[in-house]
Length: 267
Image (cartoon, rainbow, N blue to C red; front, side, top):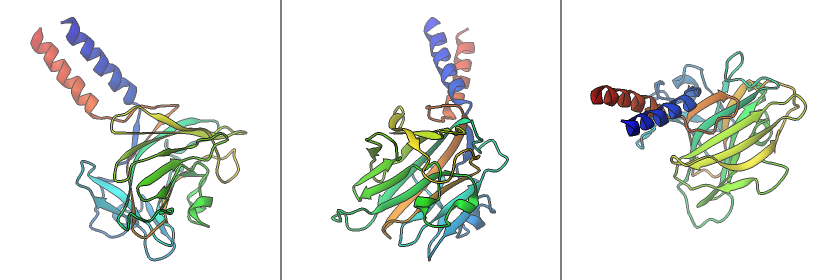
């Protein structure tokens, strides 16, 4: 009986610790038979592109339902979302954590040793800031993925090195961005993991990449370039007030319910 109660306590604690996550989007509710993200999402996400490609909502076969897809190429393309007036916006002097999952792939000649990946992810003061110049100049909070075909790196420009970590191509990577939107010295911390692994620090006190501080962050976006054979997938975007380095996991609620049934049966 004590062992069962201990299990219930652990499951219950896990549920409480993760229940404060708010889902921004998992892309599963959209009609992805439409071609462009803007059309498929009814304007919730706006396709941004400069050239012949843009972003899409696509089906997946690895347990992720649908996801946001951006394809590499000679021009930037991706999607943005306006967060103005929502709990997802990061106001001045607020600490907030964002979580999402990203997978990068390269379908070309793996013998190429040069830089092929180019993905900017993050938040900006306004959607009008995104895709105005190029994605390197579009975000305040900006984790990014770059490097060679078999060795993608996740990065965040920070005062001390290393501020990058090796990812695995064709593998979903968990990303946490802990944003400290301090009015005078805004910074963010970047963490990552795979599977159910614990968050590992990539870069601490990373620099505000662009734009002045003392502004609310009212836009989120994902922008890709790189080689034409690169693919970038984004899924399961969540946010929470303060620092939260857990993995959002709805299954803990189901486990707690199952535990309650077992307890009643034992009694």
